[in-house]
Length: 367
Image (cartoon, rainbow, N blue to C red; front, side):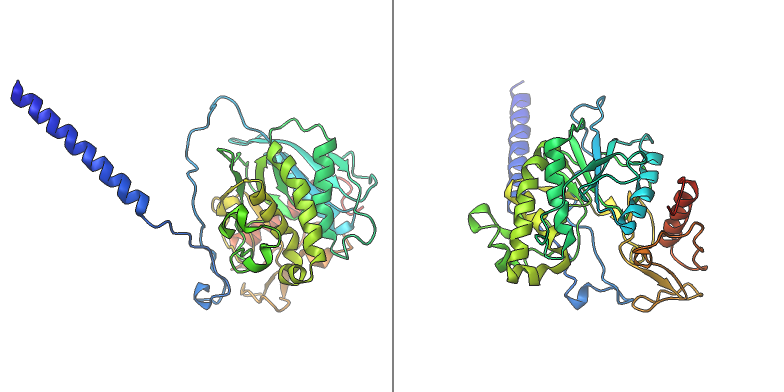
């Protein structure tokens, strides 16, 4: 009996020592944050294109707090009343409806936040909130500054039933039902390789002072796509608006950030309010660089897709076959766009098929 107790005590002592050792080792292990560095030639793949690796992976397989209750999010898209934004919104909303009630979806309501200041003829087709634009001249020709101001108005005035918001954009096509990817008070956001807070630390410190923490607290994100708690966004949005305007007025920041200035402003505002983000690369894909749909949820067709008739990418040169949203900046894309030639990647083929399906089924397309 005494030998048994002695053996049991030895086992307990050894186990405690082993656990303590593992804790010490884990606590002192370096945390690697391999942010993509597109300015570094070594980050390019063998074909010369920038390779964007997954950023820090947060544990996405944790059980939800309440498995029986869906955590619905409201999808919000800001838009002007231009032909360019309008045709994209109509396609986007078509696919939203297709997947809204699909398996695994946490997609709740939808709102187009129209920042033209007046209703348009698509109010009955797309649920719409009319926001006022910034005073004339305030955006200094950078119309994107209307986005944070529109969100401020919507969050203050609209009756939003869901507890979470997905901020999306007109040139997003949803390819499958989207679950609520946020958790534990963190937002869920797509990481952009060209948002580089560390590179621009000296500029960003004007808006994110050192007492707020290390510059790495600023995530490499924009405001879209982001799923975030509604109450968190209500705090972030006014700062996002004010910092966007302040950056635009600051010559150094305006020059450094250019067309992604408002994205930096959101990233800074999120950090200022202590809202971190799960950096989720599978949130969306961007053809032609991303060639497969894989596990992605959204196609973002921001880049032009140019190919020769052998299916070879001719980026930087207008291809024999092309799809570029900028070809339709003031005209509606026709129905039944020609399909790409053989050899063009799945992502581009899928995009064109989805655009064609939407335009074929949306009533009064082109008017």
